[in-house]
Length: 150
Image 1 (cartoon, helix red, strand yellow):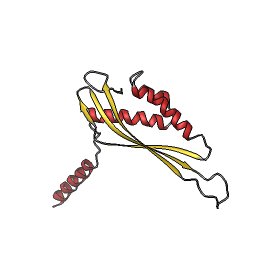
Image 2 (cartoon, one colour):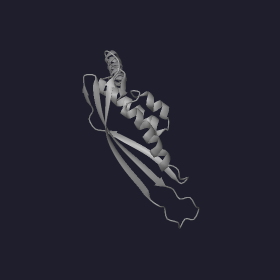
Image 3 (cartoon, one colour):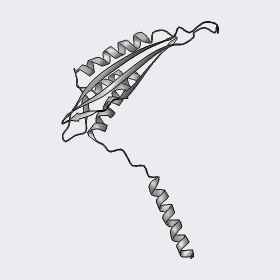
Image 4 (tube, helix red, strand yellow):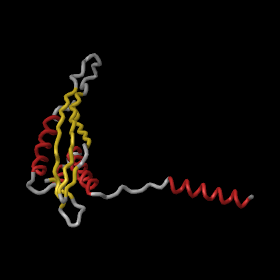
């Protein structure tokens, strides 16, 4: 009887250990392309524009778009009382051969913060700009792995 209880306890412990294991995400082309786009936008959000360009084909559309976003963010963040935040989400990614298309929606919020300690002063409000992009990437290595925005 004690042996059965001991074996049952070991089996339950083993099941608990195995069910709590986390399996790393599969490194598919879709995942790698989405990760590249994510890193590109994170660099732009963090104002690391040189880093954002490293995820692009030199002289490509998205390489030049970094300068446009730098100007956009700087222009909309000039006021001391404003804050620029950029969010994004994905629509289903399409991978065909050595090209991938990641659909991205960028939502830029310009939140005007109250500057004065005067509590009766009303906030100016919030401006929201929504951008939807069809981001095309190319696989730069063979067999696969390094994606770059075109």
